[in-house]
Length: 117
Image 1 (cartoon, rainbow, N blue to C red):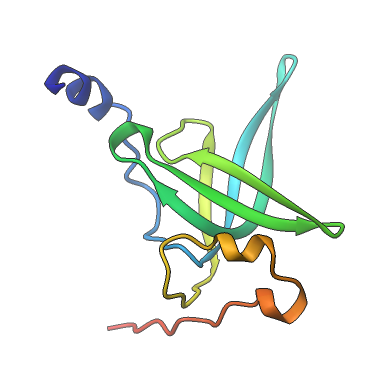
Image 2: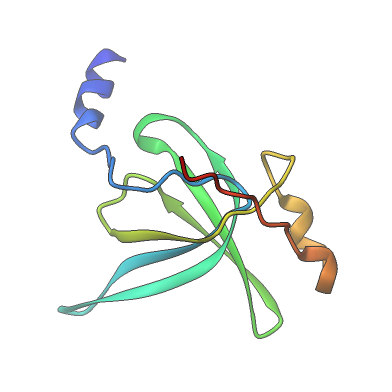
């Protein structure tokens, strides 16, 4: 197990801002189409974080044209160009799967205050 941790240590990303479940984020993801590469922005609410080490992932959910879309991103992926936090959400759960069934105003999340000290 120690060998796996040493190999994975080279892959770790430390350039991400500190984000939590409930935050609205913009994930700038590199898409390869043929020989070209472009950056696609996926904006939504982080509904879960799971795993540890290199296999750590987070799930982002958005509603596009009335259809819920979820995407799982590996946290330490080299394909993630940038992660921006749009809103800081205040939630009391680690997993926000209830948002899959909530509609309209029920799916809103309160904003968390940030203290700048």
